[in-house]
Image 1 (cartoon, rainbow, N blue to C red):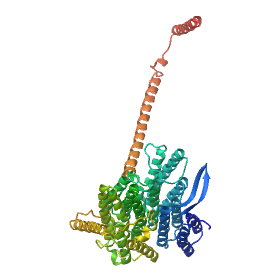
Image 2 (cartoon, rainbow, N blue to C red):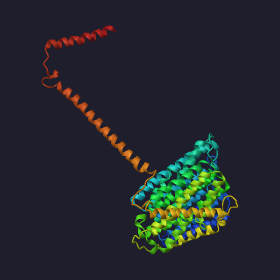
Image 3 (tube, rainbow, N blue to C red):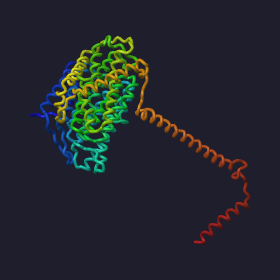
Image 4 (cartoon, helix red, strand yellow):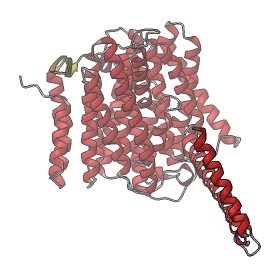
Amino acid sequence: MFEVAPFIPFFVAAAIALFVRGWPRALLMVAVPVLGLANLWLLGPGSFGAYSVLDFDLLLFRADRLSLLFGYLFHIAALIAIVYSLHLRDTMQQVASLLYAGSALGAVFAGDLLTLFIFWELLALTSVMLVWARRTGRAYLAGLRYFTLQILSGLLLLGGIIFYAQAHSSLEFGNIGLEDGAQGSMGQWMIFLAFGIKCAFPFFHNWLTDAYPESTPTGTVFLSAFTTKVAVYALARAYPGTELLVYIGATMACFPIFYAVIENDLRRVLAYSLINQLGFMVVGIGIGTSLAINGAVAHAFNDVIFKGLLFMSMGAVLQMTGRINGSELGGLYKTMPKTTVLCIIGAASISAFPLFSGFVSKSMIMSAAIKNGYDWVWLILLFASAGVFHHAGIKIPYFAFFAHDSGIRAQEPPTNMLVAMSIAAALCLAVGIYPQALYSLLPFEMAYSPYDLTHVLTQLQLLFFSALAFVWLNLRRLYPPELPSVNLDVEWLYRRLLPTAARNFVAGVFRLDERARRGALRIIERLLTAMTSHYKPDGIMARSWLTGSMVAGVVLVLGVYLLLGFSR
């Protein structure tokens, strides 16, 4: 059988898309993920594409149940995002999106760390094009900041690969771990941090909340699907059972809630919500049991679909109204009822309502936390679940489509956008109603049923009291209002503190230079004044000297010379 690596169809299609226009390009873009999915299904588990570089054995394609699940997911996500963007006539966006999806597939099926690094960097390069494709000053600056951190991740990964290869004489992309005191531990930590940057670990997360809201309406859908999920896959492959990830993930699940609640830009709210959901996945990977890993991977699958649906619904609002701030929207359900319903399905899914996709995966992670003695982590995840219902489950549809009537009367988005959102909504319902279809693709075999009485009642109580709290806070006018503002968290360090410090430093250098110049000029002026004073009419150099004095001086000099000569 002729074997084709999954990334190749996307790269070839991107090259062809440079030279075709109109419906042929649209047909090509839709066909690529469909044919690519069929190709991947036929390939199944296995490997090929072995080659050697400097005595290291490298592998272009390696597929097991873990990588295959992400491969299927990325093909589905690419298809939905491409259908959503069919109305575009932007070569830059369309070519970049194909290369971006292909790079994600290349990273997922890489059998060695060097191949992973190549596609890791391609992910950075192709994804930033989707930010810059909006062609605004804010998008350009956000893209620069985004690209800087992505390149930093790549440099850390390359450095870590070098140290790891020296210590282990292998570049196999497998379980790396964080062995304390082990030879090559520096390489292991550098690779871990490289993955963490792309996974939006705390203090390294602002590239996501900064750049995603500045991308185009269609570009954000692609961005939400690939970069962070490749990082989740890499962590699940290389660091399963690393307990540090449990604490990192718990932090990620909690802190974005507070920023999302006060944020006005609804796509930025979803960006914070994305970090919140990544936290659940990271906790599952850190616990490391079969149930936890399955839960993390299943939640990654579901998150791509329901978060993509929410980003698509907000992209449709931005496309049709030109606005995305909650303070400027409201009342759109009157003229955009289909988009409203589809958004509510996405909101119910991310909030883990029973019969929606988020419920069947999030409960696996929380069950694994309880079973492995992480009781306080379970409580944190419970709080995070309530928080995500507040800011994504309620806030997004409420302020965009209901709340106050903004007076905007926008039409429904183009048909292709509605079709894409409908596909995602159907998948959210299908996975929630029949989760065994997803469970059968997970890395480990298991017998798990999410619809037991305890899980259902616990989640319904959580959702009920969260909704009650939202209503009460709104009635008492205690809920943070939607204000036209920009909220900064850790990015304050490099968007405010560092620029201010740099400006102050440069200004201080210039002040110091000015003072030094002035001091030097004063010294020179004094020297010149002192020198010129000797040549004034009353100066010593202008006086008349007697002949006898001159002769005496010459005799004195001659005497010293003869004395020195005689002493030799």
